[in-house]
Length: 239
Image (cartoon, rainbow, N blue to C red; front, side):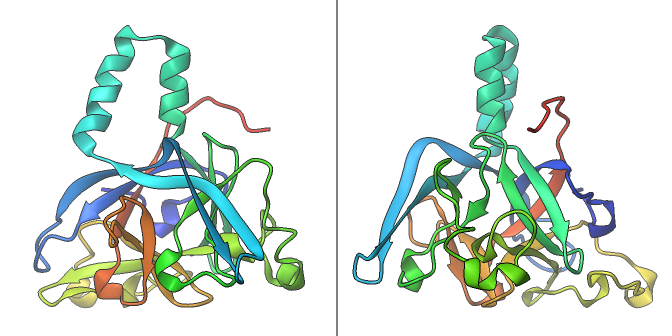
């Protein structure tokens, strides 16, 4: 079913499931797979006429069937290899602000998920995990007072609750952060589902919209990707 906002805890390790939108208010859609760091591909782009060079690990989605196969194969493989592979699907959550505001740190890379904005055209922006030697904290010093404790302004995301209707996805006004509202007729949503957005510019994550199997952005909620957040069970300790 996925975690509701009031079930999500600061510091929790989670996995993030991409959902197919389905149709109508009675459909829960289907599982497209799970968000992960690509095992070897990076994404490099430049902004400000080449004055800024950005780079990070690609974020992609592995189909659910392949993830299930990986879990099955893990029983006969080397434990260290499985741990490294599984880490690509795990993210540490830091909550701040209203409770919808988050940062996501990849357990595989140890770095925060971010995107590149300055001087980069909208259709070239992608969600990535920073390279270990890069940090946008230095690049966003001017807005540091408004930034979350971990990272800078480029790492700020928000969970935007949505619900399904016959007309498509709409904001779930009965799942507002920090508010206790009753859903119409006392009937709750069938699942806790979210669009992931950048609240500073009102854009949403959108998977594979440019055919590159990466997480890009859209300004239209109707085109946004839909996610569920699941608790991941791991005994790995964070530094």
